[in-house]
Image (cartoon, rainbow, N blue to C red; front, side):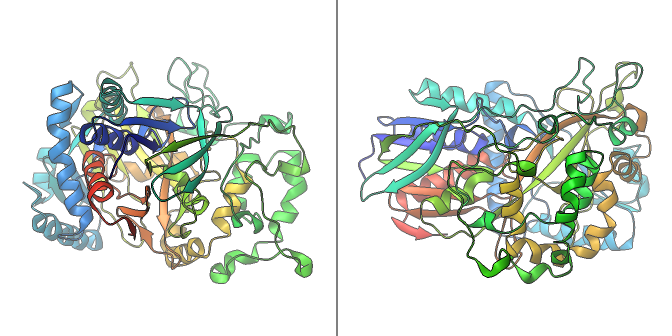
Length: 540
């Protein structure tokens, strides 16, 4: 295979790790990394708690387990050589009842089968010796679980790419592919301006939150944040989207609790709420799939440069002419846009991406002597297979202070990191996908139990205090907010493994394991093996 020009689409941690892997294996090739954002690790990679996930609960011998182990093997020497913060602090999974204790036994068996060193069960007395502020009936201790700085890691990987002659093109959106026998043509355009993240005040408070008299934002302030009745554009933001295909033809349906919590006091929302509510029957029939528009007409396909405006308003659209570039090899690591880019290249739509918002909170109050002393390492809840997004952790951050989270809920947009907006095309893509409703039906009972913490910050902190009661709720502030790209199959099964699709010289990473950031170097190694040494035409 003659390769002189290589493109990687996506400048998250996996995309940059892959670019670095390719510059090492193909020293004569020109490697270019494209990203529509203006910086490295702009989305999921840069919004985590920093935990180096050892995949404790992975099936013994599974690809996920092997990838996690190999990831740590490659990660440790790399961060050591580059001086990237990395601390083995240990992790406690704390059971609150007998059911969770039984699950800990199962996780222990899996961890031992996967040769994760030092993992053991602790009774209450032993638990307190490791973490004096942990509370529970039983705990599983993984002493070598670590925390690091994944943004710094991505930057170090990128420096290697640049040193090897690779280039980065930020603010450049890939809009399509033409796959030929020995090359791939990318269709490119200048990306729309990126929606900024929530502003953070000088005290670290989230600007989306109401402030107290001292300027700080506590969890109660976050819950009661007031919104004005100003122009709709101050509350609703939509960004241009591409690759929608026919996913947006379904109605925007009742995510009313979430929408009402954000926009309930606004006049425009009151005007459209009845229309939204009329579609609520879909909640009671989640497997029904996409509804057709009334009148029996065929759905209208939405073009790549077109997006729907809220409340019937039209805005001027900026025309961004497309350009093309030809490469011998193209690999796509696009996270939340993976399924749309795959569809644009003519691949099967599944697995589809459903975005989930992950909110993190922090305690780093300078008036507290050392807030990090509340937790020495990582204290977490026990994973529940029937409620896959219910895990909570309190993490002693690599930079000091504590990080609490994630607080996870279905996102109203694939790239909406702000609290006051949603994307109708993205929302339509989620609710028009049968697999999403099948997943929702399978997890309905546990989701109902976790609904309040998902939408209420104070309720979330109270959940945290069940296993770390020493947490001071008044000291908690909003921290980072990211979008998790969760791949889901048509039958509602979550795809928590590396899945790659290849045809000719184009390869698309469709999904990553949950340990994606920690396994980035191993994922890059495995994808490069497949692309350079594997079959030329395969789906996997």
